[in-house]
Image (tube, rainbow, N blue to C red; front, side, top):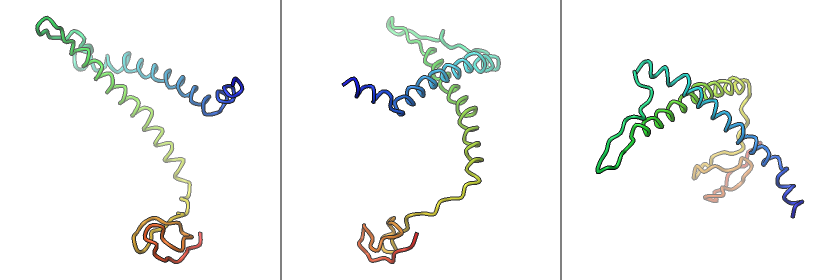
Length: 138
């Protein structure tokens, strides 16, 4: 049983997942600090109030802290924006540049002339409508 556990733990996918979780958590800390320490103060300087936690109302002795909720929503939107504009967009541009020089692969499927379903190029009969089709070489 311990041997099986050792085999499971030392699989590449488990180790890769563990590394991804740790790196992801630390990256989240960096992005949160960037938003909290740099972006939020800029918004506060423009809008006049970077912290809404003091906003609340009371009904029948129950206090509703809607300001905290606003803080969390604003923080979420700011973090999402920072990740999108400073991580996702640059990576997409780099991938587009890297893929620009690659030639597209030849398709392995084609459409059946009768039912327009996708069938393999080498098929002599459609698997959906069973119509006879002329096989194509790859």
